[in-house]
Amino acid sequence: MKKNSAGESGISFHAAVYGGRGYSDESLAVVLGLAERQLPVQLYPLVFQRDTHNLLSREVQDTLERLKQQSINLSRSVYYQCVPAHDFNLQVQARCRVGRTMFETDRIPDGWAERCQAMDEIWVPSEFNRQTFAASGVDEHRLRVMPAGVDTKAFRPGLEPLSLPRTRGFNFLSIFEWTQRKGPEVLLRAYLTEFKPDEDVALVLKSFARPNPDADLLPRLAYFVEREIGLTLDKAPPIILLTGFLSNADMPRLYSSADAFVLPSRGEGYGRPYMEALACERSVIATRWSGQMDFLHDENSYLIDLEGVVPTPPDVDVELYAGQRWAEPSVEHLRQLMRQVFSHREEAQRRAERGRAEMVEHWDWNMVMKRWVNEFERLLN
Image 1 (cartoon, rainbow, N blue to C red):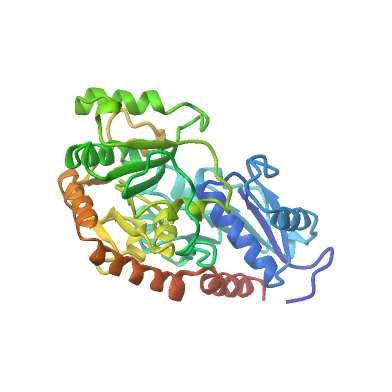
Image 2 (cartoon, rainbow, N blue to C red):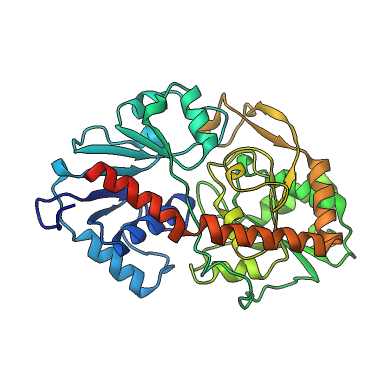
């Protein structure tokens, strides 16, 4: 590739990199990895234009500012967009147009296939998505599985845990946006029916609401516990609700505050929190379906059986999922797995250790970025 200057080739990188969400954390790792390996990148942040929540180090913030000032010739460059496919910008012309996207059900929404067909390539994070996009009408020759990774130096065992109120001898952790897809009621029902208030166990929920991340989730939690379980929060096994944002430096310490990570999601593009938990050598309980199956198996995690792959409910809280199908994790099997991890800790630790080793060997960003660099260079050369 030519050395970069105004008018020469590079990557026009359009993605959310600020805000601490799934799309933005992945794109942040990718753009920093490309810059570290000296690929010319001109950054166009989407959604937030700066680190409004002060989640990033000063060094990272400065790097991103520098990348915003980079200049490339779009006609000689890759135009890369990481957004839901309905947001692809199809008006821009470039040497090559790449869409990075994903979806979490058994097929993609109406209209997505046509927009994907208008791109030169579609990069999805998992084999699950390659299959669902192809089955929905996207030409297979456009599809490439480009996995995400995890920073195993940041997410590692042995970190000082965050100080959390009301933790007990054994603590389950779950991290999710409070939507039906993430299965919060599945998790709460399993936990509250399996464990008694006097057992030495607690459930830590790091969650935020949709569409307003700052909304108070405590009334929603209390309503579910009282109406669906018949308990008040003060009479139930402890549930520790954490809201708001944590810095990128504090997120690994949150995993260190727990003994096991559990998320009975009904569908994932790739399941970033499962990767992070394994990298921190924490036991993982996950649904046996969708994107995370690229890296989870019965030797490194505990996989929840399905009641089936079922239609989304008529009142589904995210309109894009209407008319789709997703997994329905078994509450009873989740109860059994949570009890198993709680009661057989040496076995759970062995699986977590294997998971950590696999994250380091195969899924660390340093390993995964080699593939990203090779693919961009293929398109530029």
